[in-house]
Image (tube, rainbow, N blue to C red):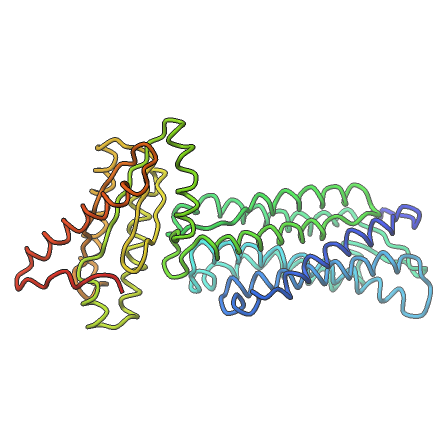
Length: 396
């Protein structure tokens, strides 16, 4: 039932280097200048708690290896404490991972409170069993001369951790398109290092790869968060002008490869009236709703949706077939109709749109044609409105 590992199997230099690297990576993230701004959101708090737990795990695992077969007073108790702490924090960290992924996708506190207390049950049971472990030897045992043994049940907390991590990946890829925002979250880059590192460590006692692997995965996530800061609009979750410039830089290669680009520039009619009458908070809510409408309308057509500025949006479609463009316009109209009928908007909301096809990489003409067509449609809209409000409903 018990599997013994001798001190000679422990490669302490490798343990110190691996966990030292993992701890340093996590400290760099925890002490970064972006920490304060991100700690205000639920997902930001979850992310930094995971980084903190990973830092502690790198430290406690190293301490456990260093304490192996030490016989000074309290060494055995410290060794047991390190092993219990490792099991508990590993279960908690992997559970927080699925909470983090879910909130990143849905931004819903109610959903977390509704479903995840039940999802926490396996982690709670592992923690309780770990605390009881020193009396019953459930997952491991430490002898009086401070020799560490694993039991056959040691694989159970590992299985729980794997299930949590895998569920987070499945959740991300299943609901990514339904999240109503662009998310740069490379979940596979988190999963692969964790799987490889943990499997190698389980098979080869005496090396430490699990927590440096988790640290690498969290570092990849942190880098992706910085990409979001660069390329995503913080209000709507759409691409911003920075991403648009990056997209435009790639267009010469795309057009040379025979790819056509069609752009749809949209401006919300009477948006200034919404801001002036109902306030900017209501105006922001309308902008967010319009962003979600455009994402849903273009989600299955490889289109990029950009908040161009103020109440202007740009849909870039890597196709030039009129029927495809018309399908997107029809989908936008249907989504707008549902939104207006829902009563969420203080006033009926509509778009003026201008469409242009990029020819021979002439970006200036591309945007000029869209802008001209959009303002012609906007002029026609205001002329059709009783009282002739004029085009004062521009960007805010």
